[in-house]
Amino acid sequence: MAFNDLVINFGRSFLFALATLLPILNPPAVAPIFLTLTEGASTNARTQLAQRVAMNICLMLAIAMIAGNLVLVFFGISLPIIRVGGGLLVVATAWRLVSASDFDAQQAQNMAEAYSFDQVRSKAFYPLTFPMICGPGALSAAITVGATLHAESTTYTALNLTGSLVAIAIASLVVYFCLKFAAQFLHKLGPNGTAVLMRLSAFILLCLGVQIIWDGAQELLLGLMRQAAAIGL
Image 1 (cartoon, helix red, strand yellow):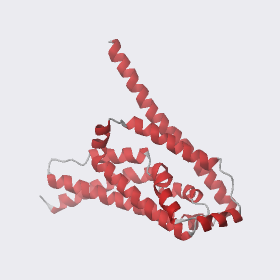
Image 2: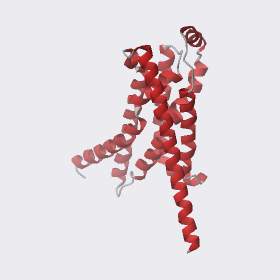
Image 3: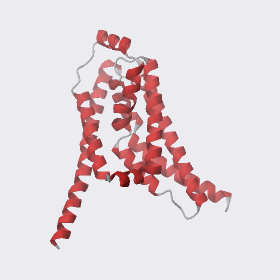
Image 4: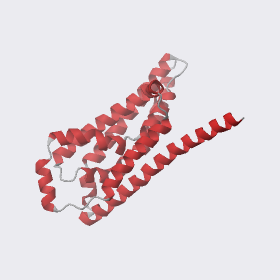
């Protein structure tokens, strides 16, 4: 087994996983929403949140990639159901952001003083990790990547798994840096520009949630139609 073949196999699995997952995670697009959900938090609290979110994403994607299909089969849950349920969570989060009132300086200061470690820990998974960043689309993509890991040789399978795990780690690191420096990225926009961008990002997230729900519902409806046609025949 040539060394070049091993390197090519590793690189192919790495690039495939990274190109599949990173656009769906879309870290730059969620930076304004991250700032909105952590309104009033200190820089240190946001850094802790970014670390926890990145770690959660890495673990969720790795588990979904390795054992996602087995878990779904065990519980009898289909991917369309995951899309519908996760889409509803995305819509609920986005609607809260779209309809939220603007904070004044005094309120933000009061929130910063009360932003405890428990709040950091509670927000790290829901809604920041799931469903805002690592939602049904990312989990479905990770499960799809996991289905391509198996190869004829155990060595190639291990290389595919290693390359995909490295890609997940890199994608999580990109998410961490985008969230950590979100305030610096948006500082040049000013308060008004940042507020507009946050509202626009929240609206896009709302539309994305509706699209996820529609994709799942469409698959469910098509499945029902196929079953009805089979019974009719």
